Amino acid sequence: MRKYYTRPCNFYYGNYANNLVKIKKALPLASNNNISFDKLEIFQRKKNGVTKSSIHSIQDVKKLNKEIKNIVERDLQNITCKRKIISRFKFNIPLIMGVLNITPDSFSDGGLFFDGTKAYEQAKLMINDGASIIDIGGESTRPDSKLINDKEEWNRVENTIIDLRKNFPNIILSLDTRKSYVMKKGTECGINIINDVSGLNFDKKSFEIIKSKNTPFILHHMQGTPDTMQINPNYDDALLDIYDFFEEKINFCLKKKYKKDLIIVDPGIGFGKNLDHNLRIISKISTFHSLGCPILIGTSRKRFIEHIVTKFDTPDRTGGTLASVLYGLLQGVQLFRVHNVKEINQGILVFNKILNTN
Image 1: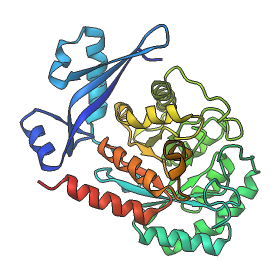
Image 2: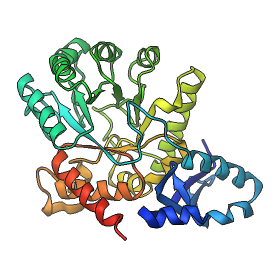
Image 3: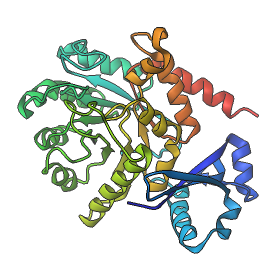
Image 4: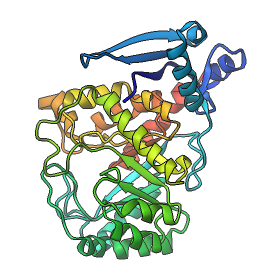
C-alpha cells in the first residue's frame, strides 16, 4: 500500500494545450500535446484510514519534501510517457469498445443477441457505427449472475468470433472471459485482447495463457465475485485501494516477464462498488494515469446512473452514459466500453470538435 498518490488535473485541450507545453507552462498527458495539465492533486493516506489531498502546480514539485518529491517525479514519468501501441492503437484519440453480450441473462441486453446470426449483425452494426473494438462475452457477470462451465461459454461465442475474424480481418476483437480454457480457444481463433473482469483472480491458469502469446489484456477490478460483489462492498478509499490493486498486479506481471506495455486498466464501475465508490472513482479517474497504462472505463447503462437520476431513468441510459464518457474524455481516458456505439461516437465527435476549436 502506498502512502502518496499523484493525480494530474487542471487540463487544457487542443492548440492551447499544445502551446502551453511548448512554453513549458504545462506537461503533456501520455506524450499527447493536445491534452496537457499544469496541476497535480497529491493524495496522502493517513493511519486512521482518512485520505488527505492537496493541489500543487507542476512548478512547485521541486519544493516538496524529498519523500513526496521522489514519488511524484516517478509518477510524472508515467503520466507523461507515451503509451505503447497495443493491437495497432496509439491511444492518441478516444476509442470506442462495443459491447456484444452473447448471453441470455446480461443486465441490459440479455437474450437480444443470444442467437449467433443476431450477434454477428449487432457486431457488424457497431463496427459501422464507429467501434474500434468489439468486446465479445459469453457469460454474464452482472450482479447475482451464476457461473457457467467453460465449454458452454465457448460454444456461445465461437462461431461469432470465427465469422467476425473472417469478414472483418482488421477489426480488433476482445474476449470478455474469466476462464483460461475460453482464453486459449479465443486466441487460437484470432482474439486480439483478453478482458478478464476478475483481474486474473478467478483462474490461476489465465496469466500463463496470456503470457504464452504476449496477448494484451484489460486488467479489470472487481471486489468479490458477480454473485456476491454488491453485498455491502467496502473500501478504505475506493480510488486508492483500486490503484494499489492495479500496481500490485502490474508488478506481478513484470516479475513474470510480461510487459506492462500490454496492459490496459479498467477500474470496474459497478463491480463491487456502491454509488459513492463509483462517483469517487469516476471523478478522480485521472489518478490511474500514474500507472503508465491506457485507461478504459465502462459506465454504459450502469445502475449508478439510475441512482443519480431516479425518476428520470430510461432503459438505455444514453444520457447518463454519454455524460460520464465526456467527463472521462476530459480526464484523458483513452477507451470507452459502451452499448450504444453510434450515439456515444456522435457525442464524442461533436464534443471533441467544440473542445478543439479556437
